[in-house]
Amino acid sequence: MADYQTARTTTGVRGVAIDEGLRAHMNKVYGTMSVGLLITALAAWAVGSNDALLSVLRDPITLRPNILGWIVMFAPLGMVFAFGAALNRLSAAGAQLFFYAFSAVMGLSISWIFAAFTGISITQTFLVTAISFAGLSLWGYTTKRDISAWGSFLIMGVIGLIVASIVNIFLGSPAIQFAISVIGVLIFAGLTAFDTQKIKTDYIQHARHMDSEWLGKSAIMGALNLYLDFVNLFMFLLQFLGDRR
Image (cartoon, rainbow, N blue to C red; front, side, top):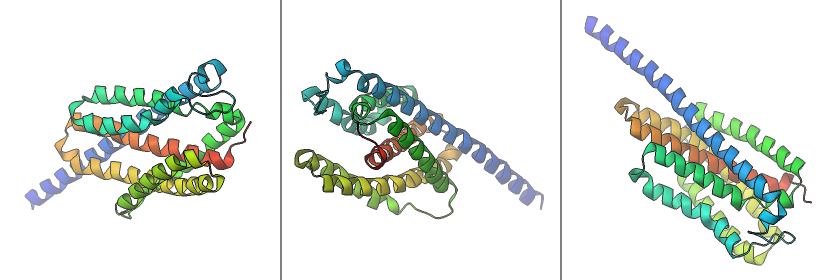
């Protein structure tokens, strides 16, 4: 009986420790993501609101990218693949620095929105995105439903969006762009919930090992995934809610 009580007490203490560790882990994920979003916003605003700086990447009138603009446009995609490949070789501090550098490059790649849309509509869309993201992420964190099966479907959807977006760069079809935006909102809404639950379940599965290096890099990767969900959700919503200049 004493052994049973001891085991029960030990299990309870371990559960409390995991709960506290999970809260700290999620706080680090959201905190790192927020810093990344701030860096992106500042970089985008600094370049997009200055015609001289924007002209380095795009025609200030037509907003068509030049050669450097094309490179910057696709640089974040390349950095995401590079980050995933190099994550095991990076320290937690190195991974965090890479994420912040990625956030700055992402800001450069979307800086054109400050020349294309009014500041008020950008702010309003950001607030709508923040509220939607918070609700979706909270649901993903608290739901008892296992939504891990969504992963394959959502990733295939992202690949389809990338291909369709690249094709439409050359076609310039408003109808295709509208369809991409609608599907994009749905896909990244789903990914927000999916990624939040995955961050939580991954932590719980690895918490007993208490590998501080893994936990640190896992938090950065989680922040990157949620950051991408937020930015893409914002960009697709901006197509509906943004007022063009």
